[in-house]
Length: 427
Image (cartoon, rainbow, N blue to C red):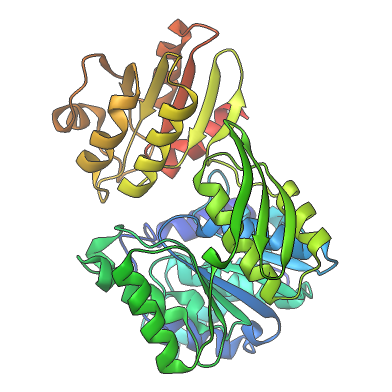
């Protein structure tokens, strides 16, 4: 890999200059496929577990990668968005790539992209997400990964990651999100996500709405892909608390003692989806058990402080808000709950807030430090709560939480950008 003239801050600044990866998204595979072809098609050099869905895909990727690493494979992990630093998106052997390696790889991809634009081969510089996706594929090849857990960025069919020919496809629960790009109906959204199902490639599906399951089944039949439903595994003897779960995963292929450190009842379903995928990959039972026990997925019901507890959760769509509300009602009903909430303009704020806010005693509206953030004053006009305060920044919101008692619980949520800011301040 050639030496880069770019420093890590240079590379991050340029990526951000390409624009927000959602607002400036250019769905389609032609640009990224052309770029990768001129890089030697690095995405053909390793195996992939390709994961799409609305919620849970990052958690499933984290558990699959952890178990495969325990099994002795040199693993890669590609996720988005990042919480604090873009390097978090690309991990090899359980560690995020270094800033220096990130910058060097950016330089390689960026210089090639500029040359292809100058020659008229590309119509424009690849987007933020396309650039980082190409960087990930290049790093996974050059760092000799055996298998990569690859999270879809947006949708599936036209997402930049969909250039791969995976060993296995996985589809986590599908719900409403990014309707402006994926369609207004749940079936339209599902159709886009079903686009990662490749001819003859096995697919694992998590529990879905009936119409979604029918659509996924039809797509798989159309391309000759055998379907495994994660519901073929069940959780028996379930013990659930605020910090994770313990259960026996039971299926036709055996019984596994699972200790899942990822909090939330929904993570039990995510773990069963990961188990179904790992069994299709012939992963030893011991590696599945240990891999899930060691899995980490920051910013999702992540406790970062005690007395009072401070918990970070990127509940950035209505389905995520409903999951968080159920978690609060189940484990924090006897405690005073503070909610620090900030959101982005492209989200269904009223619906998410209507589900989540009744679970909290005190609401503090704030805004992530991001140009697409909704100002807290505007949020106040969209929501209703008897105890509601406004803070112009997360720092100010945290100062208001100084009033919390040691036995209280504070949840910081609504946007992954806000969660990332909180992690930078609190972890």
